[in-house]
Amino acid sequence: MAFTNFKQPVYQGSQTVSNSTVAMTYHRNHVHASTSGHVVRFTKGQTTDVPTIVAEECFTIGAEYVDGKEEVGSEEAQPITVEARREAIAQQVAAMFTENNRDDFTATGTPNLKTLSARTGFKVDRSELNDAMKARTDAD
Image 1 (tube, rainbow, N blue to C red):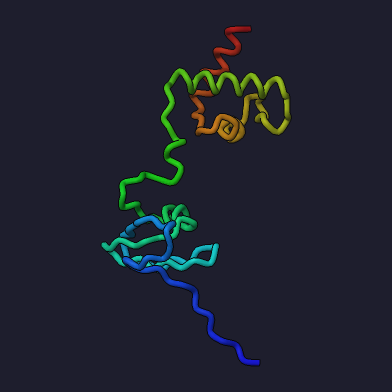
Image 2: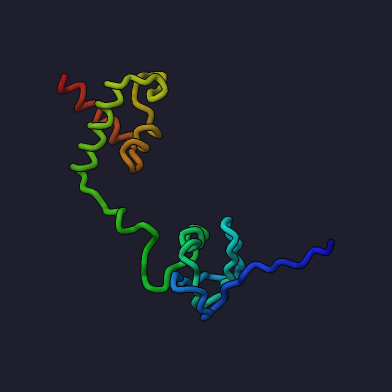
């Protein structure tokens, strides 16, 4: 039984692969083999049509959208106000104390920053947590 050479499709330059592609550029020559089996060849300074199924993956390695789109899912990533951040942190701190899960707290009894950041959906700074804890103790 003989094995034949299987070649993955390589998308390059202005080839039209399907209706679901996005135009991207990369800062150097690079061939990206995605985890979904697609291979995309980037040529420095040229626009490459990338299948949408691997566009996010290419973006994470540094490829940029030609149409000016900042990132995949950028419609959802809207900046929030300082007051909204404080409120979200305070709500999640209160919920953590109500649930009283041992793994959500540090040895000193303060909420774990990683857990709090995961619950709020944004990175919480130590000073923001300290402010929320101070407001919580002042209210009691």
